[in-house]
Image (tube, rainbow, N blue to C red):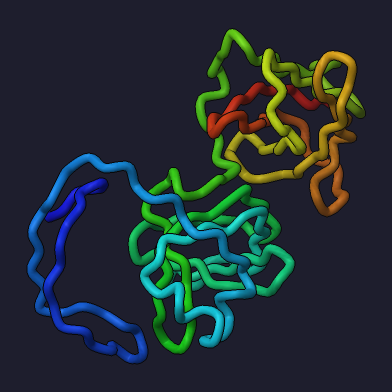
Length: 232
């Protein structure tokens, strides 16, 4: 039962389980504890399509960036994302997440496995997904200002973001009251920070229903939210 951050020596037998290289009959000894976990290896989704580019990442902790969900989870919890280089599979062997088609994720971190002639990334926990999941909308920070006006929204609203530092903010994400992803908007630099305008349409160009909506940014790995009321 090793824990995250343990440095260990492993003894075992190398085997191939339907093409997936594994260690079996293992024993291990712990050398040290609470070590920093190595950074994941940056990989493109297309690199995990073929053995000649994917096999070297078997059991490696990797990171995908700026991906879009192209297929929803099937009956086995397998879904697909694409960063523009080709689709790859995300699996739920360690952690399960249910995305929606078209949802955009800032990143996915996970361990690569191989099963049924396909390579897949297995996130370890919720922190491995730069998701659009709604956290506490009342989260506050002394350095963050995130507002929209007018509110309630009749036809359009301006969303403004300001921060004491200058993080590389590019987009803001919108969700309905259930946490369903609605749309991603690109922020433009303004005199006092960043801003964008929303016309009450979802990512498919449909006018949204009246109700409460949340908007979210990510700064230094933390989510910041606020809410608006749409009354058209």
